[in-house]
Image 1: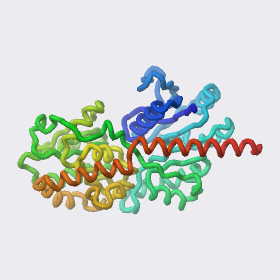
Image 2: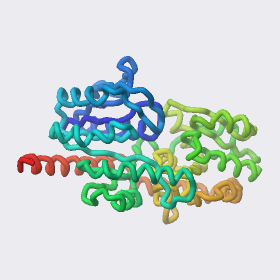
Image 3: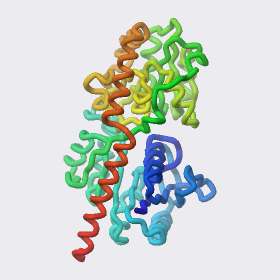
Image 4: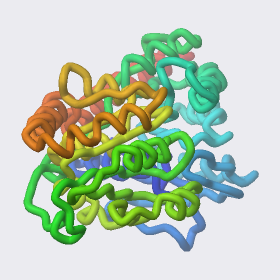
Length: 381
């Protein structure tokens, strides 16, 4: 089967990781994959030699939004006519082109699958969650025209169905982690950072990630006695937060591109913390869990679902700083508890969130979409 993957390779975000992990796994299972993404032709760098790339021009792109150039739609049609893929899988980049894809693929008789990533909160409790809910409202009529729509949790599925997307086309396939790569193992990170207890945040430094609440909670908890907080990531708030929270026991690493380095940090973490106001299903959280860190996250998006039934500690998205002020000293002073939570987190990933299971579910979905498409066109529709 030939899959035309329309996704994202830069700037770095969860969508980029999702596209890389899924397409590499599909290649490993013998599929042919062509990766179409917004890039300058000279910027194309393939992760795998056997994965062909096609660049589409753009005016602007960020971690959240992509504005294609006027000719990108025409170039996409020409590429699909030339490639003749069996299926198009769009890992949606929040681009105006997303709304044209159903028409393009219907004209070319190609089944169209979407993965819908936007973060959300199960309740509209703040401006960020209200804005994300609006994104779902805007996209729902368009998604109803796709052959299949993948979301990461039952909560997202229920929301899209309430907004008019047919239940029959919405599939829940959670993010998955390569458990052979992300696993507990030896690391010298604590020695490097001179830490007895290591707490880690990994992700964007942006308003919806609510990193300042983590920093406030850390400062008010007076986390001394060999405890270090490592902040991995970059974003629009990095410079201001870094200047204001310049404590000796906070380590600002910025964006870390080396995956093995990120794994080493997660392996050394006693506690992984994700204080987001809105989320989808955080890959960073799953990676921390897979590496055996005790995990704390807000109940934004599906993250609370992931940590439910004792797999981690779930925070309310309100008053995150005060909750962490209370919890952080407990984690510092009770290593046996954090070790037990780390084992539970790892087991939860093994039970529900492996990349292998994710790909098997995706294969089944592709088969369904192809079969439905053949029936549809054989009937002369």
